[in-house]
Amino acid sequence: MPLLLKGSCRCNAVRFEVESHTPVPFMLCYCSICRKQQGGGGFAINLGADFETLKIKGKRNLGVYQAEIEDDEHPQCEISTGQRNFCRKCGSALWLYDPTWPELVHPFASAIDTDLPKPPEKVHLMLKYKANWVEPAIGKGDKTFDLYPEESIADWHKRTGMWVD
Image (cartoon, rainbow, N blue to C red; front, top):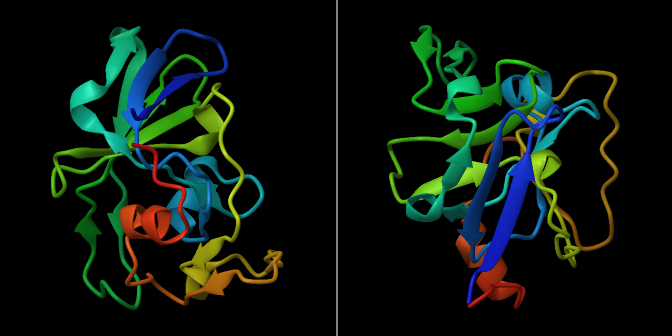
């Protein structure tokens, strides 16, 4: 049975729950969007969950941000398909939904109130775009990527035995 993740914003105007087979906070993203939207330590951690199970209280307090992307991989400014949901009252980043993968939603680990499993290893991605002041804490067994890894969140959970049935 998937793990039921319960989350909220800082002021509790938005509360949500969603089921996840992939609840381990292992993937640290250092891109400027994640870092500036909700990564005070220079990165953000996104989890994976089943969009169809997402239940929200306080929907009227939600805002959605879609980033403009212009970088080495996107030389012409593009609007991200990723919809970053946040609380309009306190500003807490809550989850990312991207219609490119309609079955998935990516809650930010920082918004989850449920205890999460500890990762046996971490993946550091988008290091090409990390802030110059950030010194990633790369642990033994961690993997690093300038951009994206080929292994998906689901495949990582299965390979490491962390998949929750």
